Length: 350
Image 1 (tube, one colour):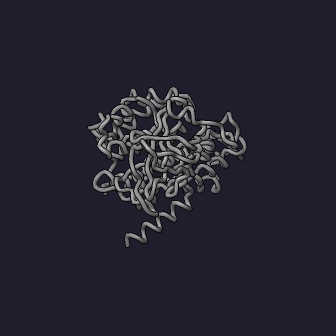
Image 2: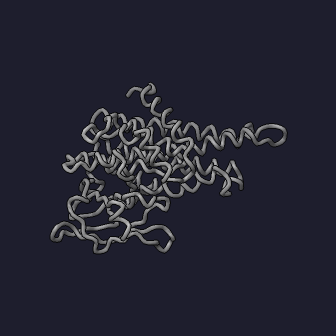
Image 3: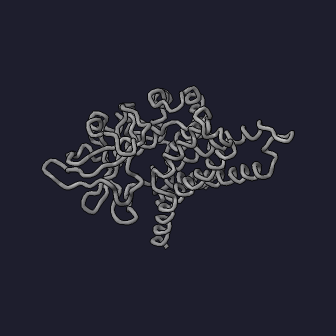
């Protein structure tokens, strides 16, 4: 693996920074047109879907920059849907329509893998679904949704368009949107891919592995953005005649966070490099995600504490990262569960 920074990825990052900087906080309606204008969805998408086929490495750039600004993640789900549809040949041109901006796609129910909350049984004309799954409260009404479904002995990836999703979304007991799918029938058009069989999932097409790499990059971005705010706050706040960053309790904490973030960055880059230069490595992907989720929790907690009580107020920029961390650090399962899967995968490969 070459650790030299990719000049193309760096140029893409600078372009995205210029486009994302003016986007209002937590405004998916404003964010989506920016992603389309800068062709962010086309970086990673294959040429058959109208993309440039630049690999997961460029998808990592997009996900990380969204996380750095604590913006809604409209990329990871859309990229996973495009990836899954393209892997199956895409006879209906669905992937190209998503890359062209038909609608963003968000993910739900990934935290329950490898045993999805939703099940499906064969019926005439398709599958009948059963179960319910919560979705992120920041999901825009214009978004479709992808979620895993257990069917027989395999796990299928199902995508519903915004039109099909609207009638089955309700408010759950916790106040979060809930997709109620009891009795809903889907056809072959809604099944966009397969995550395989077994425990852990076989992931034959590498769809799950690549999605985990993108999610890890988003969490890294969240942590890096919170770290930058903490450094700025500690450098500007003075006590006893000097900036608080000069106190060991603050400075050492920030230094440790910076080291951890660098290590996570290398882990993600390695997993992305493996995916782009050969077959995706499920072990490298789940390790990168577990490491990223665990580090994001630690770094954002430390950054919030450095801000003091002000960091928990809604007027503080730090508050956005705190809320985003609550939503996303366990949206693909807790770090403990991810590390357990990593251990199981390692045992099966040695």
